[in-house]
Length: 547
Figure 1: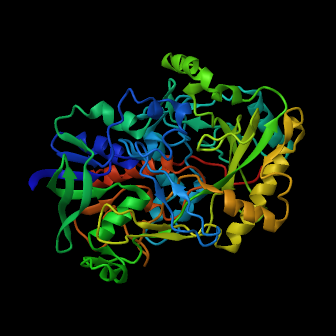
Figure 2: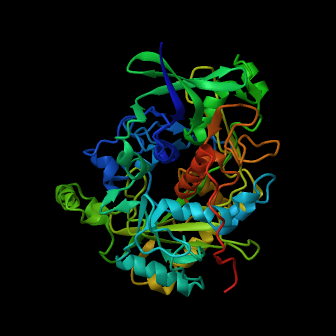
Figure 3: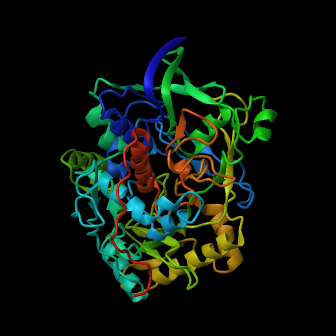
């Protein structure tokens, strides 16, 4: 067994891990090791770097760890596939590249919990600004000097025009920037694409600094657990290049995401004592919250056939792909964008105090697996409740680190969740039924006119719903009985030398895609780990309702 010594070992070269590696290694006296179980994100790998190729890695074992849930009890026993990036950059290398912070109220609600007072929007906004370079222009809400370059739109297809007009016709607000002053409303969206190529966390944060002599990266390095000396983490055990190795460190930072961070905690004896003892895992710290509080966004596609030949459907033809690929080499053409260029954040009813539905509009009818149910021109809306109160869990099945944990989300398990799903589908139909779509609408394909009653809608959602790939919450920040990680230091409660920094920290899921808040958390964590003073809270006002 080979032993190496570092100041920091980061377990996971995904979104948060890449940001941490950059910030912690900026001090040349810090020796930093990044261990990533996946392979390198080579520059020649088209399926990673071409934005419109995002459907290809999903479900492909070369790019995807291919997790799936246990039979979901409220979805007819379906197992729901969950793609997780199997390459450097983690899921930021295979996701939809949609950049959304969440609503300011999301963070203010975090701050209502014990110990979370400095996690309100005012304290988070400076870190959102620090990490980004908004190419539409910086202001008091948007940064323009950070490593994450963020493009907007351009949303020039006439179907995008129809979508935005339909929002106004349905009585909704228009937002100039959903990541700025006002999230609520219909808008052109931001994306993590720069000059026609995906800008993953690895490309934004890690690759520019890989030449630092104090930064070491091992890919295809499979971590099996933390090395513990009583209640102190002293390093990690891992396999690399066919050999068992250890890396000793002053600090171990888990950045494996909402599935793998709780799995590694449990394998290391940190979690619910009853779970662990039943599997023969020696208990280091009895933390019942490890693996619990699992959350996600479930979504459906409401799809319509298009009466005019204006959708992107022709670009999906196999014979066009060589030409499209050639265009992309010059950073142009339909392959140079993710096509999720517009959408909306709205309230499904008058009782909620901020948007609880998110829409992504796409000028083509296609599923994540690449299937095209319309057979011709079409368009679709991705929609689902953003603040579901359904909660699940992640549990190890055995002490074998290579065995995927048992994952259950309990989608559709609560009355609120089911009610908001009915509202989401009916709201989508109301929007797509506005006059702006009259010249394009050739009929609803999915779910179709035969799905109308409450029972039929919920049955369709249970049968057809897919994850938006936003698992989070399984090592939540806070000081309460279910909390796992200290919100000031990012240390695991009751354990020295061990921190967690990734999407598993979210106390409650944000009303948006979770990549941006995960990167914000990583930026905050870097300051905490380095002992830097936190950035001063912002005094910028944001929209909180009204007209």
